Length: 133
Image (cartoon, rainbow, N blue to C red):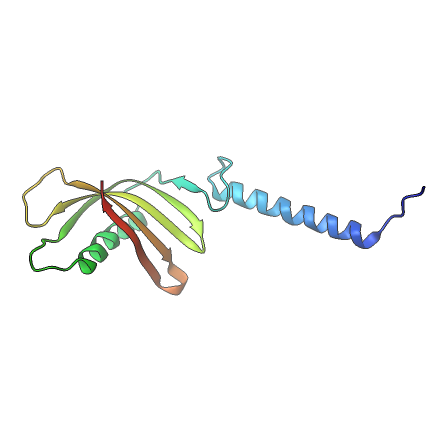
């Protein structure tokens, strides 16, 4: 029984290996070189980065806008405590934010978990979740 070499099949397999290798290397580099996969969550190392602070302030502002009430005081952004990012069709930010209730005098602030989806090339930003911890 003789095996017949099929050039089309060999070319297809070679292309598949090259493409798979490319995506494996790309996803590893997006994961910070820690073996992370595309779509996985990566820890934010600098919570004072201007982009991270901007996303945190957006989350608090958007929450205030969505929960308008004459009886409810607004939250005031203090800082991003910690966070993670996820590369998808854009970037998801999962941030733990410290904020104070604008109507009360509190130095420590409460902590909130906010998730924001950001696609800067489309000028799109959306608060997908915001809750008190």
